[in-house]
Image 1 (tube, rainbow, N blue to C red):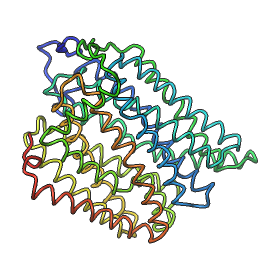
Image 2: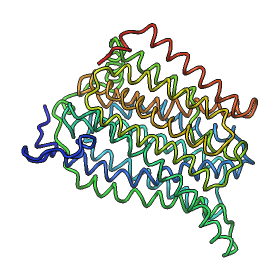
Image 3: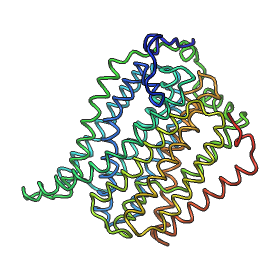
Image 4: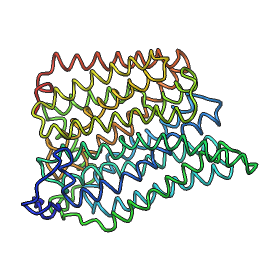
Length: 435
C-alpha cells in the first residue's frame, strides 16, 4: 500500500517549507520520532564514553579489554541481526520499538546499579554488552524500516540525513556531558567517602536509563501508517532472510557499495576504541578533554548531515559516497600522526563530516533499490555492518594497538580503506555513477 502524504503527517498543501535542509521535519510522525530519539541518543553516548573509561579503569588500561567488549556486542549482531530485520518486516514496528527501547532502558539501569554498588566486574560489562547488542539487532532495522513510511520518497535522503544527527550528532553533546558528569559526580563521591570514579560512571549509566522514558512516551503516542505490503508476507523465517540477501546480491550496485562501507567499518577503528587510548597515552588529556574529542566527531557528523540534507536529491550518489570515503581515510591518517589537541579536534571534525556522507548515501541506496516489503531485512545488513562488523574490527585493532601502538594501527587502517576506495573509484563505474 502506498503511504499517502496525509498519513505521513504533511502540513497543509499551501504551507511552504521555510528551510529546505529540514524539510522532512514537516511531517508530523517523522518529526515526533526524530525529536524523541535525540535525548535518548545523548544518554547513549554518555554511556558509551563512561563504559569505555570504566573498562579501562577496571582492567588497568587494557585496549584488548575494550576490544573484547566490542567483540561481545558484535557477536550478538551476527547471531540476531537478520532475525531482527525479518521480525521488523512481519510485526507492528511501533510496538516492537516500544519493547526494544524498554529493554535497553533496563540494561542501562542494571549497569548503573552494579557500578554504583561497586559490584561491577569486567565479565559483567561483557555480558551486558552482548545483551544490548541483541536488543539493538531488533531495534535498529525496525527504526530504519519505519522511516520510509513517515516521509515521501523525494524527501527520504533528507530524512535519513536528519536521522543520522540523532545518534551520531548526539556525539557532540553526549560525550562532553559525560566527561563533565564523571568529574562532578566523582568529586561528590569523594566528598561522601565513596569510590569517586565509579560514582561518576554509574551516574552516566543511570542518566542514560532515564533518557529512554521520553522516547517510550512518544512511541506510545505515535501514529504510524498501516503498511499492508509488510503484513502480507508469511514466508518461513529462513526463506525470508535468503530472499532479501538474494535481492541485494543480484543488484549491480549494492554489493560493491556495501563492501566499501564494510571495509570502512571493519578496518576503521571506532572512536570509542581509539579516542580513550589516544587521550590517555598520546595526548595526555583530562576526562573533559576526551569528551571534547568525541564531541568534535559528533559536531562534524551534524555538519555533514546538514550538508547532505541541503543537497536535496543527489543525482550522483556514488561520487558522494566514494569522495566522502577518501576524505574520511585522509582525516583518519592525519589524526594518527597528531600530537596536538587542537589538530586532533580538527581532524575529527572533518572525519565526522565525511562519515555522514558515507552513511547517508549507503542507507539511501539500500532503502530505494529494494522492494518496500524487504526494507527491514535489508536494513538488518546495515545494522550488522555498523553494530557487528565495526565492533568485530575493534577486536583485532585493540590487539594491534597493544602490539604496535595506536598511531601505527590507525595509520595502517586508513591506508587500507583509502586503497580500496581508489579501487572502487577506478574500476567500478556502476558504483561511481549510481544515481
